Length: 145
Image 1: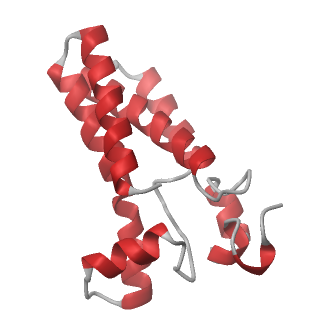
Image 2: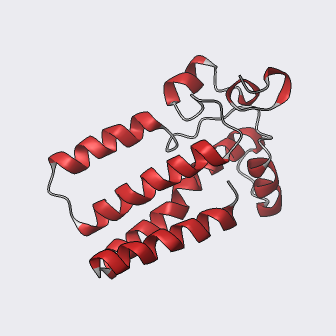
């Protein structure tokens, strides 16, 4: 999804959380993580283009699936379930709960709002596909199966 979509969704969720719990900390943690979980896209960019950064080019290639390989370490249901387990076996505080909600919503919107195959947001699936972008997403010669 595009950055603007994540900002709007994260803002909406954080407003909802604030209305429900009256906690600026919870709402802020949710808003910030809902957007910044996408920082893992920079790994693909630097992996492909080196340690130079052209923001316009970054958004162009990230939003159009132009990386040759897609790792997206934070965008995986496996990591989300591990994080969820850790959150719920510890005492949940406002920050962790805000991150948990933002993470779940972010992955759901990405899963259903992007050119994803059913397993695109599985790190194990991406690993088995050698992280090759054209095999992971509904693009290129492999299409969406």
